[in-house]
Image 1: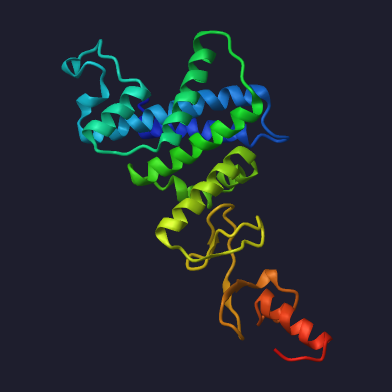
Image 2: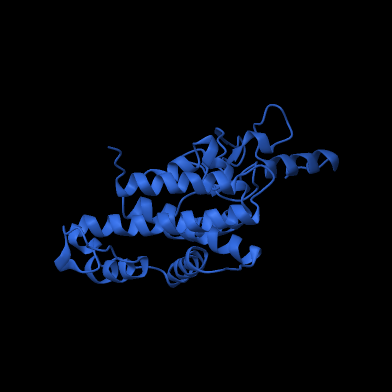
Length: 249
């Protein structure tokens, strides 16, 4: 007998979605269709797992039918409502909207004919993926966020524009709250390189952080022009200007 837990089932669908999103040449309309089905499935399973952690009966539409063979599980929208009321879990309005859109499109795909705007699809898929990584870490303690910047297959998500932009905004908002010290990444050129962890929180690029010999600010050696790399780009620029103008600063 093969048995998948809620988390194992969700992970399988997430990996399937990532395969389609990172397809060579970029995702096709058919890839988008599969991804919408997969990420909607992931969300539903993660929400149910969080309900199960409160009490297994809350996973079912009719709590009184818990453990019976004809019991139906809750929808993702009902799961969100229960988690808010029973688990005191707060959901951002933007998250709720993204989850509703992906759910509605998924229902059209599975039960009727459907149409979608590819640009809008990219945006909503990106937003839902951000929710998945955030919820899986904060509410379920899963290491999917770490895997996103360490697993070669998952790192390719940075190439998916919809996710890249949504994740970038989410990380900027999180850093404002948490006070993480960041500098510009030399690969994606976004100021989300974590100085302490020595990894870009957005694209997963890793490099040792160096302290400037003059101003003592942190920087990446790959961002300087001189081989010795003792000065940060700003001090290097000033040094070059002073030398060119026979001046000191």
